[in-house]
Length: 263
Length: 263
Image (cartoon, rainbow over all chains, first blue to last red):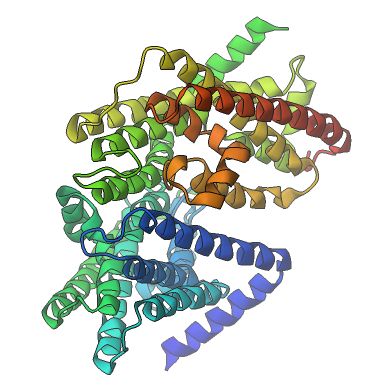
């Protein structure tokens, strides 16, 4: 398949680019462990004071942190770096370099979503999965095949929602190229570090329906703790499909607005 | 000292920053989110009882004050000074008949005004909705103001010394995530310092980070008795003196090493 072969090429090119900066590897390693340590400690500090918040225990919230780290790892593996080259003052939309991207004989959305890889994030991913594993071990419950399947589906739906939101934010870049959409998204994504159930009602609504970052982490974590039903999971999967179709349409409309940069 | 020149510098910097206020408002919005997450989480955890003497309304008051204090003391010198050294723009400043630290001060004050133009209204609206419980003793106010002033100076000179490391290593900014994590854990953001578990709490009391953000907030929200305030102010003054010496030494040593990049 041509698509897969292209992705292979992009991965190789990104790997060559990355290995040129070896010091960055150690800095990234340090940052990954810092992020992990601070996250675990934050959950530990909270649950050293209370045992149970709205049904969430230490191990459940730890599982959610693992899902959060895994989702962020997936994001920074390719979705984030690829889409981010559109935005900002030195981005392709502002500078007009998108001309060259548009001219390539590949669908623009595909190219814009997979062209840049940050291979180090495989490590972030592994750390996240490790935290989920530790949380399951903490719970001491048996892992059934059904729950594993539910978790995998929930994770898939969550990642799809994450991609859809990022794609929609990238589409907004075509309307105002200088706005720091990544910064805004990063800020909102912070909210997904804790279950949506821990927020007041109005905020829970926003995080579920308006900018559904809450679903990205809460639903897979509920699959781990065993509180997720098949009905809810089906609903979230439908939502993920609707969101990704909607974001793709928005992105297509946005690209049509592109009028290059004067030169 | 050339005070007219310094004043003109502050005014000029402020006016030029106000031009890009939407950019700075977005930055300030991002800095607000993390304390807000922990405010909601702790407020929910407290529910109708109290944790370590803090009720739901007490946590809200603590974090709303923390948002303002964090923004007031936030040190941006790594971008305003560090980037200047990295890119060789320090040359112009060294030629002026004014110590370059005044330029950093000017940017600092200009930034504070722009950020607060967003933060104060947002915090006031949140206070109206969430009804915090804040009734400081009149005798705590002078201690709060003194602690806030020292917190700002401490964070500024600490950040200045850190930024000056750019004289030696261009990747010195990689230290920032470490500092941010320490501030997140030890300065009262993840939880008020008194709620931290044993050894972490001892660390928080001894290291300088609590005295950059959390300490003034603790005074205003009445978490400290008279002896706690006195001890805190003494440690804070000690760290401030250390930061002053540190930034002075790094400046003198660094400027000797400086050879401008670019032209």
